[in-house]
Length: 332
Ligand code: NDP
Image: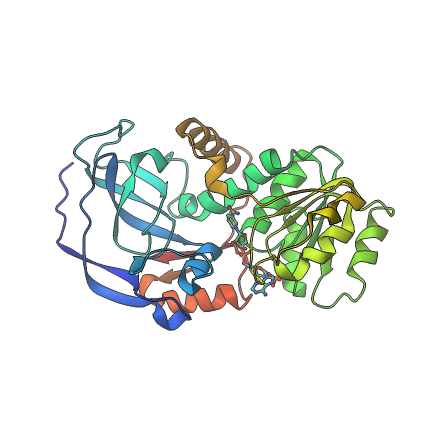
């Protein structure tokens, strides 16, 4: 299928780190040329992730100028000159995870590109990949959750949080979730959380979790908030339990003395998704599993809102302002 590719495109450029004011909407960015091992994708839906805000603020360093964004869904329009392209061809509907997503076109490594089954509605693949694969790998690799385990999920109504609630319920785990509003609490319950705690209001958070679990604490904590909940995590995790610290929405966890873990033989891990899907086989295995969960098991993919690409500042403001539930998408 021959598609004419223009010379320039719209996209969001960040030249220096800072607040949402550094997100510049441009209409004259050059369309990238796919290099060896890459395909050029015309993006239809772009996923917004909390990690994008870390690259904007500089919490995670990356060379600037930079086009932010780490996942999108769209159509392949051209192929790089050589390399392993996994059989992709122009016209293929795909979803990908790499860099430079906040734009009309992105040249992406074929190794991190996956075809989208026709049974998946437009937008759902972009809404599912990064957050869904994170939840899936966290419950299988960071700690293998077993039926009957008590599990604490922070920010349970967020993007990754709602995935975790649904996947954990499917495994037969018992989920205690946290959220900051009554609407979020109701939503997380609808998605599988058995108990919910408003961690902004609860004065005795540790006592509450201990009470629910009969004094034992939880087998695993999934903490995406970072700084604010870390001390609580060490308190509420059971003897021989695991703390999975996988995000920094409230700031990075400060350095701590490893000797503190000996009080209960706690295991602690600080994973990133990219190390769980590093090899093509791993990426394909988990993506296929994710698509099956959506199509066969009818998992709910909640889209908070689809913003026009030029409204990126509003999307970041809403996400950082705790005003969202589920996935934020951008439409170029
Ligand atoms: P969310 O949809 O979960 O949005 C963030 C949520 O965090 C908010 O809605 C809010 O929920 C909660 N929160 C708690 N404290 C704060 C705070 N001080 N400021 C802002 N929000 C706060 O985002 P994502 O699903 O995209 O990402 C969730 C987390 O997971 C992020 O930290 C992200 O970096 C991390 N992540 C890590 C990955 C990895 O590979 N390690 C991969 C993917 C995501 P409430 O109002 O209920 O408190």
